[in-house]
Length: 369
Image (cartoon, rainbow, N blue to C red; front, side, top):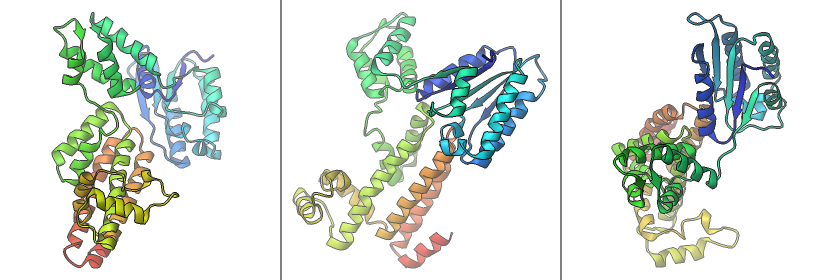
């Protein structure tokens, strides 16, 4: 066992990050260096591994010992990248180096990994290795209860149930909301349902509606408030992007009905007729709009009229490209999301302008730029 070498991974991202901080704090007398991983291909993974090995061998300037944290190692989550010949060669170099520098502390953290990979087995065998799986409901209940007791308080069973219903089994969100609750109830001995209603955020399904509405309604203040709230709980923006994609999916279908069936407004009877025309047993309702609320679809129809069908399909393709971009930059998704947001809004306004002028020419000008 390599005493000063640590490896922590797992689907419990909050637990992995917390455990990583605890390990780092145990090396408080050492000079600390952190390397954030962002590799999306073999070449970038090799570059990071080279940087990591160099950091391990660099003499500390301000302390007798050194500790290096290689954080959120992306290529360990992607078996394809991890199996490339050059990456495997650098992993072997790293393994040899670990044994040659026992005095240097280091930590490698990653999200979900395949325990069958040779390198993962090696980390677990020769380092202080841990795999932290996502917590279940019972573990979350115990965590909340212990944190509340630590603050000399109690939480009612009803309040505990409501809190976990709103947050799910996500310890990062639970911890964030619990911190707010403890401050809010500083002068009380117990936490009740009323406290949950007053101070916590409900992140159950549908929680992105306000943010997505703000995006298409040009309410930038509300949209950025939603973005800040989302990224204060987690680093992954893909769920928010999926909500945008789902909205555009409905808009594309509405635009088609507007262009091909002359649909100007929505009603229950109209939806029933359209459902009979377009739906059969091979097309489940979850994939179409005919089971949605007519009032909600009427709102989306107004948005759908702003751009052509071709433009909305292009917009959806851009969202797909944004998803790929986010996947390449895990750990830095907020900045990527912010940058791409302005690109998408510029595209939307360009395509909307095309609807009131020469559509094809304007669309081609945008595509070229």
